Image (tube, rainbow, N blue to C red):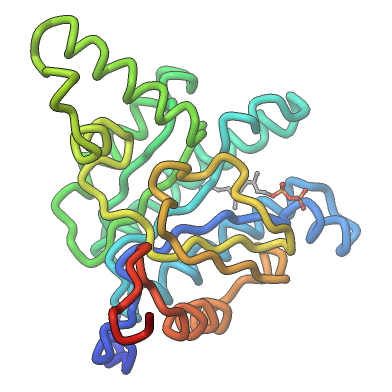
Length: 248
Ligand code: FPP
């Protein structure tokens, strides 16, 4: 895959980490008179387009919200179809990802998946661990609140065991116990599908993320939409709560 010389890189306005709430599969299917599963299937092709665009632009981390902790409460048939699709994805797309230099990581409450699927997830992480073209984080059975609670639980245990002193605990210590440990916070969070909410995605990590909402159903997402995200991001002024003295 050829990397394009992106003018945004030169200006230092390229996000290092893009995170996406892939919404609108069901509605896309509805508008085409198809079952919801067809929308999720088409969503897999959109993932490939998005990943290719992210890699070509030189984005270092791409996080995709593929299955939320709340998605377990959907109709059991849809849950089964989504997990089957995940199995299909792991079996049929991973070699392609590996060849393209993609390092794949999974974040979420993975213990909720069946043992064989969990084994697949570990195999994929192991296979791609040394790749360095781009890191793809797939959020599966993921919830931002769940992430914060599991980190708090682990820190509480470490404190009980005398491994850490709670009085000296910092935000960095906390972040190091999140599922995203070692990954920089997302610079921009994108949601497709025309709704304006975070839906329990990366709640801690989104503290200073720029938000972009696109009125396109996820299965229609393509390279042009990715460029629109980069352009919108480049127009934002990020201050992280600090206003430059000159503009007071
Ligand atoms: C939201 O659309 C999307 C999901 C709940 C699942 C996202 C899954 C994929 C993109 C494909 C599967 C991915 C992998 C990695 C196997 P929705 O169903 O809520 O759409 P709606 O709001 O239009 O109903």
